[in-house]
Length: 224
Ligand code: GLU
Image 1 (cartoon, rainbow, N blue to C red):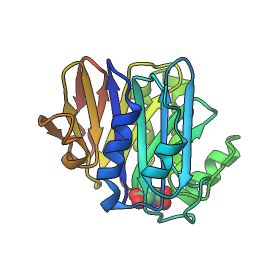
Image 2 (cartoon, protein in one colour; image 1 turned 90 degrees about the vertical axis):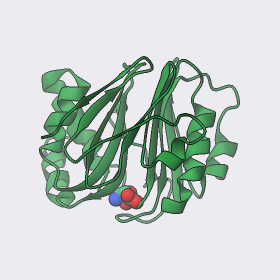
Image 3 (cartoon, rainbow, N blue to C red; image 1 turned 180 degrees about the vertical axis):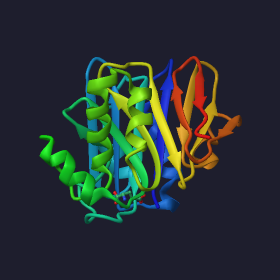
């Protein structure tokens, strides 16, 4: 298990991502990480808990979009390198809860296609698959639909792209994931508890769903 969180807001998000990660630590706490976009994309990861991650973050972070993760390792030991978010080509960044059963086969295919793996996790294939599909579709939602067709296993995924300063894309299969609806801000998280300080309006996603979340709105693409 582990916990994921994503926020698109009209306010800085780092503090709320950290607070949500602390509430998700019952799901796993061997490492933690965050990726946010303001004038540039900033990734901070550590072995250890969200409080350690918090101490590493800049106090003046003004980013209003980001994703976070608290990990309970299934593939690859707890380490900074294996902590999420995982990236592809410095452009796509993802957090993942679950297990990708066919990751070895996908790792081989993506390596043959020229991708370099930085971690020992099963999750990193998701970042590279999204990047690869983006090259043909040019759209993160379409790339997510295309990428999950190749995944076997359980996943709740939240993804951001360095050039998209107001869009998170999420997907779910057999791992919990919901959208939290706020005022000029919207959220994705593994459970309602993670968002209890931010909203009490939730939309629970179902297996196969993909959703797009911006600060103004959200849209669910039904997987059925
Ligand atoms: N399988 C992923 C990893 O080991 C996610 C772990 C989880 O969901 O706890 O990094």
